[in-house]
Length: 359
Image (tube, rainbow, N blue to C red):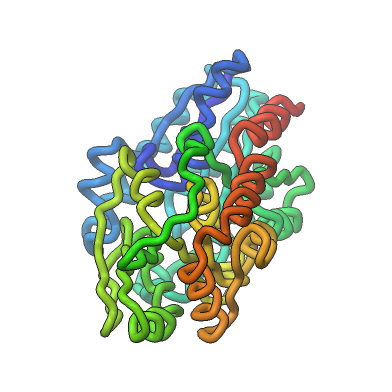
């Protein structure tokens, strides 16, 4: 079986990396001829990042759309076309529509994969002209045209089933081979390092825990480490910024004493797949998260991590970890087992292979 994976970014992008690229070696081991076609090269992805401004954003998406159109010429040489997300986030999804139409004409199976609530709008994203011109039917249009759909969680799957009956859930997963078991250790350090990994676009969610960090910092010495995010203002708290790197990602996460995943509760955040939460759990870092969306499924409160719904709970649960890190070793082991049994690529590659092989 030959499968062409069309990704919306190169391996640098977290969604493409965790939904597609990390599976490629395993698929090839299973005798699946897996080809990839990224919307942009790593160089162009970095040079024209949408975060750099409107002009960069326009160039970025024009190049991405052209690249996906070029992929049309590769379709005849594959049995299955796997479209990972849309390349144009706001407008009519012409590249994907053409891919679906060509696939049907050539009798190729076309699968659409998404791991965010891209059919809605993030509450923290700036309300730009692009947002105002968004074509709201773009996602359901593609879902209805594809042969089948792969969703990153049940919430997204529920939406997709309104427009396509062949919907399967493959959770965003972790390659545990990159997270050695030796990292599972109760650490006690001064200052305590509380941290978060993300992107500039998701940094605003940290505002949820500003009063939490300030209250804890008033009682003890802490550092809040931001890995890969944008500017974060938290008066009274020492904030460190670490540049994200593919090579050092696991090591950087493992440097944390506590990992956090704060979120507001809205239709966009309910569609998130809990990647950073799974990364903390795999790395042996105690995790505290907002009880939003898939976080409620991943975390069993007090067993493999903590859920905190307000400032009082956030402070209490972070303080509990700080005061007795060694007492949380069993929690870290349970967290690792959760990832191993439900959110590892070793488990979920079999689900993906089954979906790819369906007629």
